[in-house]
Image 1: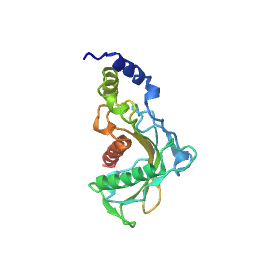
Image 2: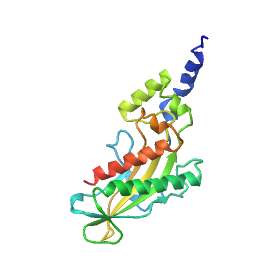
Image 3: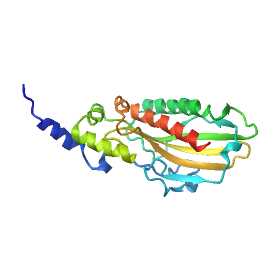
Image 4: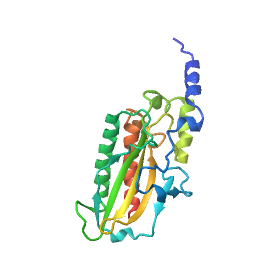
Amino acid sequence: MFISAKPNRLLAAVLCVPLVACGSPEPVAYSGIESSSQLVPNRQDDPGRMPYRYATPVDWRAYKSLIMDPVTIYRGPDNQFGDMSDADKATLASYMSSQFTEKLRHRFVITTGPVPDTLRLKLTLTGAATSTPVLSTLSRFDIAGGLYNGVQSVRGGEGMMTGSVIYAVEIHDASTGRLLSAFISKQYPNALNIGASIGSLAAAKAGIEKGAEALVAYLK
């Protein structure tokens, strides 16, 4: 039986909406985090993965140990969770705690008390977006959606109807309490990552994994 291609083209037309409509919320310098007043726009962040930051000259190699504070879920009015359930937020916060601890363990001795040459890391989950069920995956196979996601993959942008995660990172010297670095990060999987499009939280979890790897690289 011949099946018309018109439905597929209609789906492509629906999916291939402007870039602003496809992406998840853009981060802000959240007013309720401790370092908010010190954060400034990061003009060197083209893909938008670290739109706000605060940095001081630091020799990260001088630090051998790290204290991981419990990951907190941001409750301020400028949070960017949309209508995400509390259960999903808790799932992402728990996943963030385990992934960052696992990745950072390869760089630091994870400790619970201040010893010499120790950093204290505070992570705050400030927002997240879920993937649109079915359509997120279909957009990787539809011709128009595939082209869009291909372009996004090259430029480091978000995939169509794919979720993301937003969080704040604050790094202190554990012995003095001095803020050494802080930034807001938005992470999401590669636009052509089909696996990360399956399941409402899969893309946000993939973003958390990428964020943990990026922090390890930053602290080398």
